[in-house]
Image (cartoon, rainbow, N blue to C red; front, side):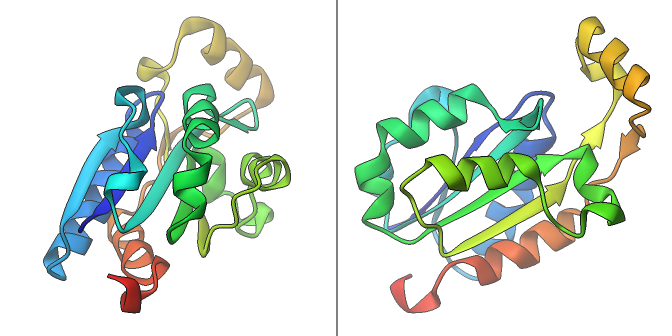
Length: 164
């Protein structure tokens, strides 16, 4: 069986992290199915799952929350690792914490075997005008903060190898 690498993205950064993770796992010989949660991939068809969401307004994407609720039983029955992706994850003051992940873990009955808050990007040309205004008002740093190699390393260590 395979690893499902499911993601919910807003501007594309989460997808690029998921692609880097998939490539890293495939280099180890693992079969990986990469899918947007908008396509409703079925975790029951896989031995393990890595699931990631972009962060918007200090919350995971609504599509990610719906997908994890809808597939909660299947996700709980296999190793699950969860990551978030946001520009703010690059902020050293956050010390690796992300309010969106904390909130997700508070309301979900799922207990991931690993979690990570990974830096994404804040690229104004990829963000709707209303959000750009808010980000500017908040003084949000802009740029591409992704570390694709680090995302791949995290994915390699996120799931128990005995189950794969």
